[in-house]
Image (tube, rainbow, N blue to C red; front, top):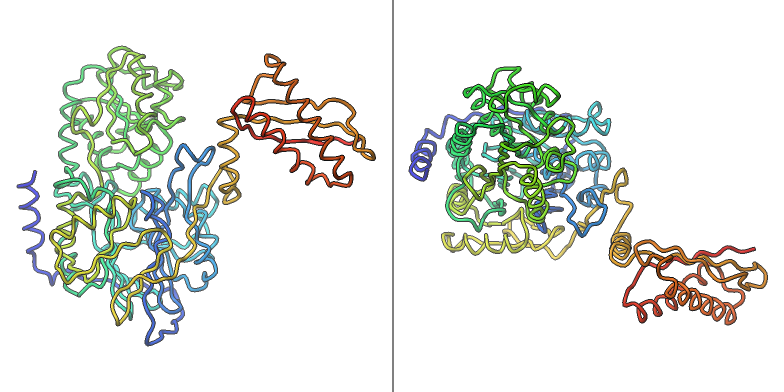
Amino acid sequence: MTQKLSEWMNKNINKNHSTHKHTHYKNHNIRPSDHQGGAKMRIIPLGGLEEVGKNIMAIEYGNDIIIIDCGMSFAGPEMLGVDYIVPDVSYLQKRKHNVRGIIFTHGHLDHIGAAQYIIPKLGNPHLYATKLTAGLLKNRLREFALDKTAKIHEYNESTTLKLGAFEVEFFRVNHSIPDGMGVFVKSPAGTLVHTGDFKFDYAPAIDKPADLQRISQIGRKGIDVLMIDSTNAAKPGFCRSEKDIGDTLEDVITKTKGRLIIASFSSLIGRINQIVNIASKHNRKVFLSGRSMIDNMKLAEDLGYTTYPKGTVRKIGPNATSLPPSQTIILTTGAQGETLSALTRMAIGEHPHVKIHEGDTVVISASPIPGNELAIVNVINNLYRQGAKVITNGDMDIHTSGHAHKEEIKLMYSLIKPKCYVPIHGELFMRMGHAEMIKTIADPAMTITMLESNGDVLEVGKQGVRKSKQKIPANDILVDGLGFGDIGSKVIQERKIMSTDGILILLFHAYEKTKRLVCEPDIISRGFVYVKESQEIASETKQVAKKAFEQVVQENRNINLKDLKRELTPHISRFIRKRLGREPMIIPIMMYI
């Protein structure tokens, strides 16, 4: 592979650089901004620096702002009940009249997934995306009835955008979804290259190879800041090519005699396309299971991103079991062990159309996302219980990343040769390791700047590049069901308490005038103790609660309801902590007669 990649790089870099032509994009009547002579270009990552995901970056000059990406991240197990997390755009919301457009580098949810929440807050700005990304974006906005009003414009690697003070160009990169782009931004104060998520693939499954000639051409313009993907910066060598993964999967398909179930990310359109073509070659029919898999492949077919004949793939249904197992492949979602995914439902016997049988082979063509390992193990265990054989990336090379390894990052650096180098996209330890790695080959004159957290500000001006002392608000906004930003750390803390120690409700009946108790408090317990089987504890708790109520009321007969509840809680909490070593959520309820 290394030899092939070397030949490919030499071929692509040494082309005649004068061949690239740009087409200029209409400016959509954007008013000219006030360009102060001493103004700086301010680069503000509002997400993507403290996590893998939730990528969004604002670039500001004078009265003009452009935004690169608008992504979400999935909530971890500690975020009880939260569906996902989106960026805080309060800084941009106050300046929404300055937002000239949002540019999307590719169609993954960690880059487009927050659009439906953020776009209305920013006054419905112009959106710029490649053809496939635009299609995925429209599908996402359609779920929120925003697709009809969204101002989506398609761009390609030859497009030039003029957005206020900014001139924006693009260069093609490879990723695990087609149509990935890097971004070149020029302002009166300086220049920026943002790689997006990238790798270099000499033989991508559908996409064209990254445009090394174009990247080198941009580098020769003199780049002030290079912001570069850090996700796999610690991994040696190069990413494996999607072509190599296709060869391995063909070997599996050829040698497997029974039914094949292949789980993968629904956005891996190139890999899915390869699998369908291989299946057709070996006389197997392909059925798609999982809503996102079906929707994404329909969109890819409609937009011309597939090479297999139309009608080759079908939605899963009762007909999936009518063919002999040796003639069937089921492509499914659920490679990360998601609770409601198609593969998980197959593994526990609850899928409406697919029952796992002895002789089935399940291929998980993905690597675990950190935090999902246990869920994936549970799914694999359940598949084995049903009689299936399971093949993972640990057994053979059936998955490759979409993020650059060390040698690809070094290649990107050598093509751009920036004055300032900024690792982005990833946890702090990833970006710190990235910085240390690039020091081994970097020009001593180049500076490496670490933006430690979301909301840090990098300023570019005539005096060079420096990190500002200003900090922009960049909190996590939690999405729970249809609620957006209506829960915070206090709610999460309360959920954690209820999940670990339960909840204890004490119902007090008292006369309104005298505040004298009518009877002992009633107790309702959930996740704390089972009251019917813990009469002793219940009785003691009632007595402590009664005594606390009488004491608080005696000290202040005019106490209001809110203060009364606040005074009662610590009395009861101390008793339970001392008696049982637990700290349930305690809720006193007053009923006055």
